[in-house]
Length: 388
Image 1 (cartoon, rainbow, N blue to C red):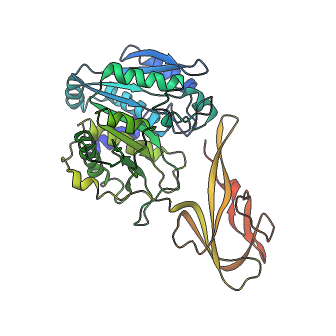
Image 2: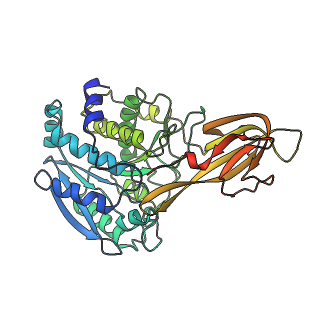
Image 3: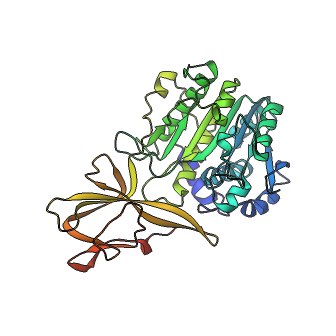
């Protein structure tokens, strides 16, 4: 990775967008500031009548269509998109590479497909429909907007931009800081020409990312689902790439993740120079597993038992006011050797109390975990976690 590019990013990313809660109200003033630089239009409306914007960049013959926040609570890629807009408009150091891309390609971006869900911080839209399972029914206005645009543009490449939960890791024990998928185009998961193109592009991005987060790039399961938009577009003969901004360490605001998406996109666009890859290398990227939890306490004694166990805590994101708060819940108990925690706490065979009680129940909200015989020893306190 070019150090000049990393230095540029640290000083110039779109600082008006931060944290997890990104709504149309956050995007409007930024979109207005770009009206003299990019072609920005309203291409439709959500179920509640909110605007769905389209940003057009470049004048090339090859067309790329990208969309973000199809799931309203998955905002990391939206932040990265606006980092890209800032890069294209302000980076003199890479002007030649940017100019080459914009002459070759026309990039169309829907920065927020699901503005209603974004306001609610919900995966679904206002009607409780998952837009990424509406590819066949096209029952929602947002789905129709995307489908109509897809047909009108006949793109050469589609980018389906999402976030994945902190549950996902790899068989190596590493977290999945970022993941990709070249969706299947049929139930037999054949490697169609379009799938192969997407795979090769993913390999290029993976090669670059290994220098930033070595061993932390994952690959999604490619079981075919015709109701998913990516599968549907791939079947229609358009190479499609699923991006999943993941979790790494304590990055609950997903600011590190946005940077990874930013550099992945620049690599895809040819601005970061990386060697071409082959299809076989795509399948060497480890497949995602649900083998991570937010916090795991190891070597715990429960209810005066003689043997030790582990307990896992998983955070549930809740919108309170205009802030996202993490609500910790007791997720699993047992040996949990198959799981890794983003944070691990060794209790050293101590007896513990959860919320000052002996009894622990799966699904219980965790406020505090302390030493049963010395309440000054705190192993977990929900007041110590916070994201905006």
